[in-house]
Length: 126
Image (cartoon, rainbow, N blue to C red; front, side):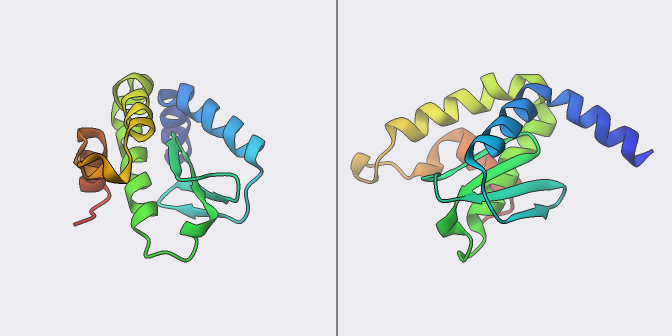
């Protein structure tokens, strides 16, 4: 039953899973670890982090961090599970646009944006 559930969940998140699989193959990150069912990949080629279905790709410097980046991206992975094929439009695109616009001196906390705040809540970051 668990395998069947995982297959259905993968199909439910298929658009972002395909993008995530492509990104992992393109970046060829290492090492890879499993985190609550998701694959977390660390890459020298990433500046930040992105969660696409079951695939989380983080900048290599997060490898020895406090774990908040992994928890935050896991929150996005949960959003993907909840929203399925709607994730990219509801969370993914707005989140990427926010990350592109945001900078340290803009006067806003990065995690004040609703997609990021919700990911932190789901990832249980205080």
